[in-house]
Structures are given as C-alpha cells and as structure tokens.
Length: 130
Image (cartoon, rainbow, N blue to C red; front, side, top):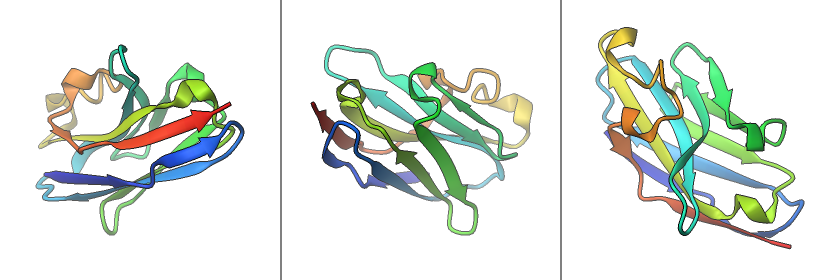
C-alpha cells in the first residue's frame, strides 16, 4: 500500500486547509484510514480516523474544527481543517491498515494508536501562525 499526502502549507490562525491522501495497493476492503500529526519534540498522535464502515473518531483537540472524509471510488482520504490554531502546527501523516476481517486489525479497537497502522505516507507540513 502506498500513501501520498498533499495540501499542507502555511496559514494564519483562524484559517483553513484541506489535506489529501491518495492511496493505492489495497487488497482487502476492511480497513482503517486516518490522519496523525507530530509536532517537534512530541509523540505522533491520532487526529482523525475513518473505518471502512464509515465510522469516525476524532481527537478532542480537533472536534468541531476538523472533518475527515473519504472517496471510496479512488481510495482518497481528506482532512478539512477549519479554525486552525498555532497548536495545530505539525507534520501531518496519512496512515492506513487493512485486514481480511475486522477483528484482525487493531486499528478498529485502538484507532488512535499509531502502532495499529502498517502503512504511512511521507507527511505534509502544516504551519499555523498567530
């Protein structure tokens, strides 16, 4: 599986950005895809996750501001980020995991655990200035 992110950039606080992730190479239809971020000196954290059944989960810090969506036709993943804050500054990564059945991937039981994902993109930088 290959994941390629795009859409990062610099924006002032209160602004918006939309991240995109183009995915290819999936074998199984049961999967999770999501966005993680890592700021300098901090651990990588799960921001927004979407499972193949459409269920979503968000970090408390982005609820109401970020929205994750996917286009199953071409395996694209998106993250709409509104009302951006300086603390949202980080490298953002697209992540994915897949399995034959739902119970075989920890991404369904621990969706925000980075170790539950096998596949990662190269990251795209988001910088929010005050």
